[in-house]
Every structure is written in C-alpha cells, then in structure tokens.
Amino acid sequence: MKAVVSVKELMRFTIDPLADNIFDAVSWDITRKGIKETVPRSDEDWEKVKIGAVTLAEGIYLLKLPRPFAPPGDVNNSTGPNPPELSPAQIQAKLDADPVLWDAKIEALRNVALEVLEVANKKDAKELFEASEDLDKACEACHLEYWYPGDRKAVEQDERQRARFERGARNAKKK
Image 1 (cartoon, one colour):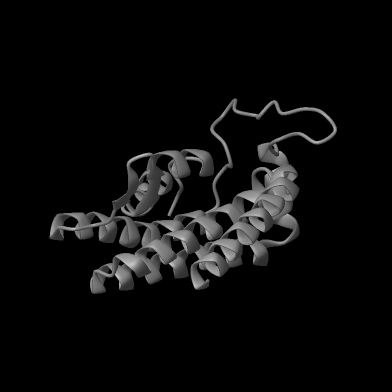
Image 2: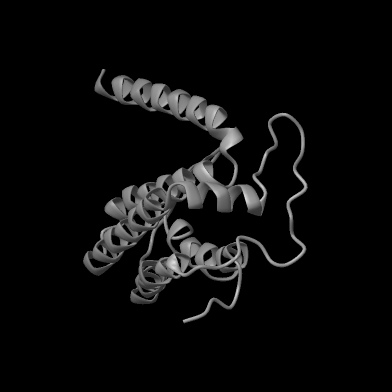
C-alpha cells in the first residue's frame, strides 16, 4: 500500500473534518441569555457522530503508513530560537528516533475514537461531552509532541488554570 497524501494533508482533508463531527456535536455556551446547549438529538445527529468515530478509528491507522509529513515544497518556515512549529524534517527525525511513541499516539487516538463510537451507540450526550474532551486531549498530546512542542508550556499552564476554575466551580455548587 502506498500513501497518496502527506500527514498534513491527511489531517486537513480527513482526520480534522471528521473529528469536527464529534467536537461540534456537543457544547455548552454561556451567553447573556443563559446557557445554550448543543447535543445530538436526532438519529441523524448521532449518525454523524458515528461517522466521525468510525472514520477516525479506521483512518488514524493511515498514519502508520510511511508518508511525508508535508506536501512537496511545504517546509514550514517557522524560525527563531523557539519556533512555533517543527519542520517536516524535524518531525521525521523525532519519529525516526522513537517510532514506538508515534505508534502509541496513534493507538491513543484510535482508542478514543472507539470510546466515542461506544458512546454514540448508547446515544449518551453527557458521555459524548466527556469523550470529546478525551479526543481533544489525544489530538493535543500528539500535536504537542510532533507539531508545535514549543507550545507545551503554555498549554499545560492553561490546563492548570482550567482545572483550578473547574474545581472552584464545583466547590461553589456544593455550598
């Protein structure tokens, strides 16, 4: 089997759009008018989530197929002492140095896609919200390793702030 597109193109044209089937399915927005809840309600809504989950679970294995990280000519001109993104050559060097880690990131994403599929089969919106957060974390963990590792510190700081905020909100509810 031979790859048709680069990792960057596979993500742009397949993985990202299908992950959006999951991410866009559940949200809670706080507005001046109150909380706006978005959850799958119809069989068609849940079918869209399933399409995302199945395609991710199967499609993510395409990343195991050797392929370039970017299309020809795309060298990612991020520069400076701490460039925001790694070049395709730097990403390839990381994969070559530790192919087991690359496979582990792929397996983690596949496991989350299978979790989402299970939740979609149960049609449980609350669990879908939690599973979509797991999906976001699996995606971010890989991106922080291979795409923009220079952002790791900022992302981890944001996560600590969010945890503090959520913990504070839970404590306020108990009172």
